[in-house]
Image (cartoon, rainbow, N blue to C red):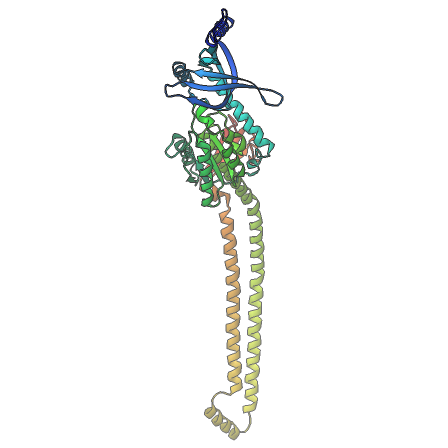
Length: 463
């Protein structure tokens, strides 16, 4: 068919539409949308993807536009993001704010948006939005409070740590524990703390810690970094692992101004790796102080009771000794009377005619001492021996009991505690200082040491 005058070809139409677009939008404009589908990176460095707009009511897609980020503009975007400490990465589902111009490619008639720059702040906002969505999702499932229900033990000394081997974060954490002088036992389960596999690797490292038996707490920590570096921790897999962990988890990731998903799911959030270690040290120090306070209170209350018991035992012993002596004397007298009776009876039986006496004497000489007398004498000897042994054992038992009580009293003697380096602080009127509320700045106090007393004045009170 021959073309008629005034007819347009397809290419001419597309070219005119392109010119009209240039007139309508002569300057670059900012466009915001959500990346849809998987971006396509060509061998020449050009990046192609689609931006969509969703309905706020049902989240359905209401509009789509093709976008092109050519190699030169893409290299500039990489530099802009690097200045902000961010890696440049365009992926499906993220929100972007881009600067560019509308265009139509005449050969294909494809309407598209040519991107000239990408706003790094929109990238950061995307991370914030993703974190908010994850937090709300886990909160709706009741997972944000699950690990918080696991209380930190009074003496958290056996600690699992998930971090990179040889990292500065690990060294800062261990240095703080060592400086405390408390007997911490640290079990390291190393994991990469940067990159796309961070969430999975940290969750796997936590799982490995279960093989080490009972732990008092587990610390997940790494030092500071860019927002993109820390965003790798915004992993749903990691959040669920923390919620299901059988221990109290402390999240010490980044710096005080940084927030990641573990900060919301873990029972305790630490500002830095050093702060995570300080939380454990402070917990142990508080328990140690409570034990010392109870020991001092026990010494003050138990010592008078022990002294009273000692006086009672000494009184019983003093009453028991005369009773034992009287019983022994009574048994001796009874023995003497019995012996006298036996001798008198023997004398009467031997009295009589001289012949009978001589005969009896002969018989006695031939037979020896009568069995009755021998038996009586042996019985008296055994009785004396038994009495002496019983009295000795009774006195030894009482002496041993007194020794044990004396040792217990000495162990709780405040003077011994002072000799070990302790001190006892009292108010000016002699009242013991049990709390910082018992004194105030400017008040005079007395500090008792092992070799004397110091009078001082309260300058500053801190918790």
